[in-house]
Length: 439
Image (cartoon, rainbow, N blue to C red; front, side):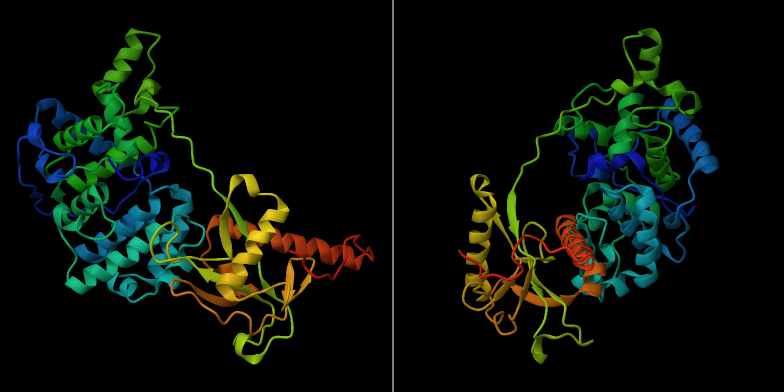
């Protein structure tokens, strides 16, 4: 199954494959295949499958959505790159959101070689707003890997050796760009197959995942594998939707066992397939975040090239682990029992002093706590695994920040705007405007 099966509901479009002679994957008995070897699931050709293929492809040719990655031009490698980029963007993100990002991305990096020359910060900036930045990192690392090897992998097996490409993405690229006869299985395909075969098993279990891949391998069209795979995904994203399937307009409804069962038994619904599995409760972490803004009195070495003296301090996360390599405000996790204001401030003061030699008691004047000035020479200490930089407000607007850090930044902006409004109205807050921080 695809790495992100829940991403499926509003996906997917791909550039139409060339009608060149398809390259059939090496066959092996389905019963001995593993979920990791999609080439071993060579399609069988029973009569019913041949009819289903023809019906689905006719529908796809007539009704497929016009999406930018379907219009990708150039050779096979250019189409493969377009499929790859769009596929990664569509993980966890809906089609209407992806379209604009895809077009901006391809305008800046139209080839895998141009992407390989980019920096991680440039990629993160372009990715800002899509979330799940690990996807962007894998795209860049994979591009560098492909360019280093000198050619774009052309088979699903070879594609899986590229950083960040799993079974689903490998199958999509290989079948759509290179016409290899391999299946794809994502959340949309899982829904279509579950209903075609009335599969009631847990779709998350490894044995069920293996079965989906086997069935998809038996269905894939040997002449138009890429178009067929796209048609399956298109059907799942449109007519065969999660909660409101349009069975009356479905091109393969005559093959659908879930529909047949629902017509025989009123207690059975097409939407009973696939089985809904309760999601695991997400883990909650508590963090203290400190927005350090350099407000005035800066020395020359910390002002930016444009002479701005209104800068924010950002720290780069480690290159491995959660949100690897992204920039954020000074942040540290705190115990759930110590999330009150006093404990958060004590923890943050200790963190700033230890990591960056910022001692708010001895070296800084604190204005309300949100505005800190006079720290021009206090940010010189640097841990081996940490980097820091100052960013002006205009750069903050376009920078690739996580949704959490972006929310903090917007809260700070709203606070400052409110404070300015109060000041212009001649109202004086009851809180002291200048004080020493007590730890």
